[in-house]
Image (cartoon, rainbow, N blue to C red; front, side):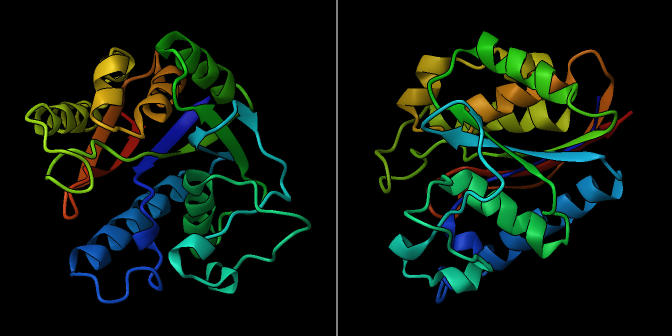
Length: 233
């Protein structure tokens, strides 16, 4: 059963080498993510599941690896030992494992990809199944909010800030039903990359009373970033 969850965004700028020259929000965001992962691991889960958007649904092999070469970062800066062939781990899972590794909790983690366009009911089903993987499951949910808070990187959309505010309120209230009801079409319009992963959390957390805390809620680069933790009430 699920015993704790942490929600973090997955911008490449989380990694210090990518964020060189960025503003102070980078340090604040990274610190919030590190603190959320620490809360997750403090619950002493038997299994940590990292959930994030991928081009396919299902678990990735333990030896799968990701890369930030496209962002000018050497793989060694991620603590990655490159495997054979090309990297297959998507960005959300790459950064999720990186955050766990910083906290010493990456060993044995299950890296689970969820298709970005997966139907809400399917996401909820997956979350329920993942919560049954071990007696004590911790879930690290990786996902960005809207990408239309400013003219760049997407086009400014007046619906973006209210959407992010709704998700933030749902995370603060630890409300699985609110996350499960997120509008798929609206999320796609607003370039939301975390919708499916959040709905996996909704399935994993259903049926339990939670207390939520949002520790970061901002859009310093035009993309909504939310960091939150859920613990049993």
